[in-house]
Length: 578
Image (cartoon, rainbow, N blue to C red; front, side, top):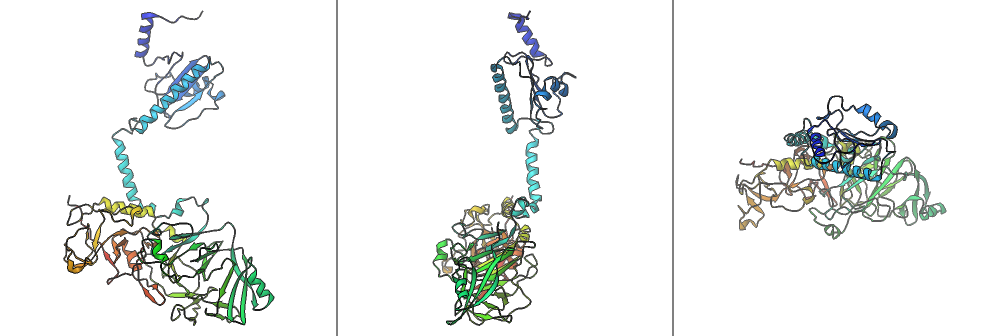
């Protein structure tokens, strides 16, 4: 005989007694069985057992000793037989479904699912609102954890020193030979990087080698020479000695090297499109309005596909017909071993720094690279037909920090190994936030100064720091000391009364130009770009080619010619009064 359910007052009393006794089970939504809080156990009757276990190893505060034993309970519920042992998630819930063969109907199962997912959702909401208190993690300890995390980030800025390549898995990332960075741009082109025209170009190992090497030499006016020039599948270099004499050198495929070409042309053979750098240009139209002196096919870089992945530079690049033509006016000659060589019209200059690109780096000597990769001293003028003297003890192999000048734009070569020691944009952002957290103030207006974010590096902000270039005192923008007779160019510093230019400060955002990870304490003069002391000291002593025959030091972030005795100044900030 099935037992009758108690009715009336008797049922109400038994219900109250059940609620007062936490060790007793309770019916949920009219389903026979039990629910145990702490570890959740839902028994649906008729061989149906649902188990929701709390945090691993955490006993239920309301279970009596021996009332719930996880392993026997799982075995009795048919966990191992029907659920394969179940799934367990530390700090969450474990859910196992026992024997569902005798479930009375779909209604009970639907009700349970609704109850279970409502429970999970409510707990998730409580967890993210910070109201769940777990052992050792109460509400008061949450801010302490956040503070500890912030202190950890400040103490471990060295971890941000690694380049983005190091953040990827080396097994998945392709081999990187290095990067070419155009001097005069602070992280990107004025109107943004687009396609092959950008301020920074990375050279990766190609899926298939496309390098070439010289093979056969043909004399002009022969069928072989005409065929080599007209064959679009054959790389060749033509040396026009006179109207009646031309030498053609065929190049064959080299499976051990990759070739990358740089130039002004937008044709498909050019991998990195470079245009003339105008100091302080704010848009691409500024550079396009100037008549370019950069060759359409300026140079090519050949990288070995096997370690140590050596990169070598050569003057001139192959056009769409896979040919290089050196006309009558270009400097060319026959070497002692019978090979041909030559120089491009405006030449390709290279300078290798001494001691590498580090804190102890010193400028090297500018050399010119020939079409075949030989090294020569500079010509009297950039386009003179008489070549310089050949330098036997130097090679065309690029080093970390090598500078490449294309007569209109200068590129910095950074190796993959050198970039791994270079501060990243994340590191520079952390330094910016650290300076702003110190709350420097304007000595005149007493307003707090702050460097704008990296995304707004070219927009003057109302909290922008300004500096007097003659003394280095940092202020906010104000009109104090601005007199009409000075035409607004020179201002008198209210701190030391020195008169000089008054310019806004900009954080140097191109991490590849930094020689160390020091704090941004110095600024270039007269542009106001801020970076570390050793970085300003290094670039202030590098003579960069300007025009066809002059050299001068320039800011790497904007290409402005440096002024003053040193070309940079030390910044003097005013701390907060409180």
